[in-house]
Each structure stands twice: as C-alpha cells, then as structure tokens.
Image (cartoon, rainbow, N blue to C red; front, side, top):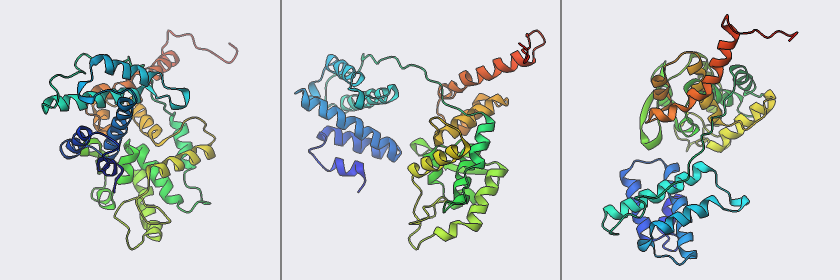
Length: 320
C-alpha cells in the first residue's frame, strides 16, 4: 500500500473532505506519486494545525489562513521550511478550498484574497563545463559494483536534462526505440521527446551490453537502471549517492545533486546560443517563465565574455 493510500484509509490522520480532495486529484489531475505525496504532507500538517488551534475546517476564515502562513514562516530552526516549500503549502491549501467551494461543501472561498509571502529569487546552482566533465570522468569507479551503470546515469542526466525521477523511470524499451531521441514521462504524466547525445548513448549501451544482465532477477521489471542487489528499479536517493560520490572523487565541493546536472544542462545550452523555447521543450517546463531563470545565470557568462573579447574593454594582465 502506498503512503497516500495508507493515510487516505486512516480516518484519524486527515479529514473526510481532505480524503475526498486527495482522491479527486489522484483520479483527475494525473499527478505523479511524488506530487500526490507532497499534497498529503501539506494537508496533514494543516490538519494538525487545525486540531491544535481548535478550528473548524469548513468555517476557517482568511484571517485564520493568514495566521497559518505566519506560523509556517516562523517555525523553529529545526523545523524551518524553505520558501519554496512554504509556497507549495499555500498552493495546496488554495487548491483544497477552491475544490471545497466548487463542490458546494463551503459557501465561500477563504483563499480568494489570501496574501502569500514574496518568494525571493534564487538562482539555480550550476557547474562549469569543466567541472561537469570531471564528475562524469569520476562516475565509473571500478571499486564499486556498478561502475558502467553509474557513468551511464550521469551521462544521460547531463545529455538530456531529465529530472532524476524521470531518469529512474525510463525503461529499456524507451531508450532503445530511437537512436537519437528518447520518450520520457514528466510531471503530470506528460510525455516528451528528449535528445540523447552520442557519448551518453554509448555509455548506456555499454551498461546494457556488459553489466545490466548481471543484476537482473526473475522478478525484475524492465526499468533501464536497476539495483545491483535486488534487480529492482533504482531509487532517486541512490542516484543522489552516485553523483555525490563522483563529485567527491573529482574534488568538487558544494551541494551537488542530480538536479545540478539538469541546471548545468540548461545553462550550457543557453551559453552556447540555444533558443530559450527549445530549452523549455527539453526540460518539459509548461511555462516559459520557469525556464527564464536560466537567463539570469547566463547573463553573468555573457558579461564576462563581453569584457574578455570586446575591443573597448580594459584587458587585465597578470601584471595588473
């Protein structure tokens, strides 16, 4: 039983209306399991707040919700939420009460004029091309049990810009169907074609031809990347571990994660002159606004390039 199913079936965890809402988004919205789990987490926290403050769910006012937002923003240091998580919480509550209003369970929507805290813009953490290459070159450690798989995963992440959840869900059939492209399933179960570079394809084929069969068990599914011990679908956390170890061997410090490869993929394409709309398609962003954050990252690169090559810039020498 999945986490979301377990809690929906347990009436002591969340209200009946919340279970109704979760059932609706599961059936109608086509959300990924990760997104549904986030909804569940947000509603469970909200339910705890309601009970702790003796509030009536269907009678909650805008003022009550504004106090809840203040509460989320001022949690103790050990429980502190990042801004994006707070905004996700608020988005969940908005969606929930709009659903209750649409279903005539409440006679007004208390979130209609709800004010959200302003989200500070944070630029994605990216690596330069040289550092990405160092990580890739250190991915296949012969002392580990699956060096070819580990190299193939990181090469594919950087070549395609896939999310880690998309990468671990790819099947062998999806990869082998087309030489130059691969169909992946993204957020909201939306499918898109992503190009696969020749180097990444070669590493994945090496893994398929020389290593994967060693891990296959009778009950193994057709996932491209599988666990060497149980032959099951590789987890997202396993990929986190793979890239952290590769970065450490490469001598690259910082918060390196699979998403770092995605950010670097997008940034390097834009630095190379790729159109923003094309990058949006590659990343699977539904809105160009989401992709535009990378233009802020590449602007630094463009300024440095201008300073270095423009004839009217003062060139700094080692003597200066």
